[in-house]
Image 1 (spheres, rainbow, N blue to C red):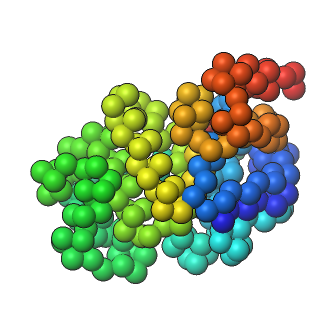
Image 2 (cartoon, rainbow, N blue to C red):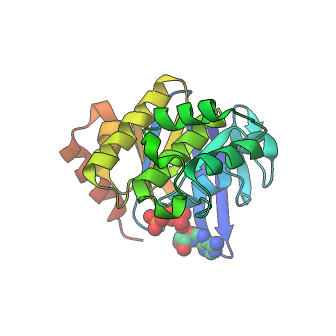
Amino acid sequence: MLKAEKLTKRFGDHTALDNLDLEIRAGEIYCLLGSNGAGKSTTINIFLGFIPATSGRALIDGVEVSVNNHATRNLVAYIPEIVNLYPTLTGLENLAFFSGLSGFTYSRAELAAFTQTAGLQPEALDKRVGSYSKGMRQKVGIAIALAKQAKALFLDEPTSGLDPHASNEFSQIITRLSGQGVSTLMATHDLLMAKNLGHRIGIMHQGVLEQELRSADASYSALTDLYLATVNQPA
Ligand SMILES: Nc1ncnc2c1ncn2[C@@H]1O[C@H](COP(=O)(O)OP(=O)(O)OP(=O)(O)O)[C@@H](O)[C@H]1O
């Protein structure tokens, strides 16, 4: 479903992403770990078509990603730490607007059903997003993914700053989407979440995917040791 082939990104003479080979199957949740500046967001930004790769290819459902490629943009949804919505529009209006950009027109009842699946309280639907908590904004982000019928989800530190309850709710929804065949690439600093939510985990260091493992194959403590050994390598 998601594939990177020798994907490389240079900013000037700095290599932010170095020959990344990666494959994520339909329904798989893949968590990318790595210290600040390891290349996680760069990877996501290339898949989203926000920035061009210097060399190599990113493919979504067999279609090569390029900047402003609407074919691949329509297949994906993006949930960053703070979901970017229009604060003066309500949750429902934001959802109608963003799903409309992908060519979908839904009735109010259909939009409300997406927000319900995403876990947003019905009484919030007609309130302006400016009054929403971080967790509520993320639920609108998930509702947008559902409404767009996204095949791939890109999450960049989505639970950073969420309380444990909201974070747990978020994980449950991602797991449910995975059961429906949605592939997820999530950049996170939360090793426990990666272990509990991810099917596979990659650890990046200085632009290189240094380690890949199935989360079922390592205890939390073994994952922590591997992470520290990877990110503490000398430059
Ligand atoms: N637009 C840019 N121009 C120049 N350098 C950049 C740009 N974007 C990222 N970089 C550099 O590329 C490297 C990888 O950054 P990236 O944001 O992908 O890291 P990250 O793993 O997501 O880090 P964090 O955990 O802090 O979000 C860093 O050295 C960063 O400074």
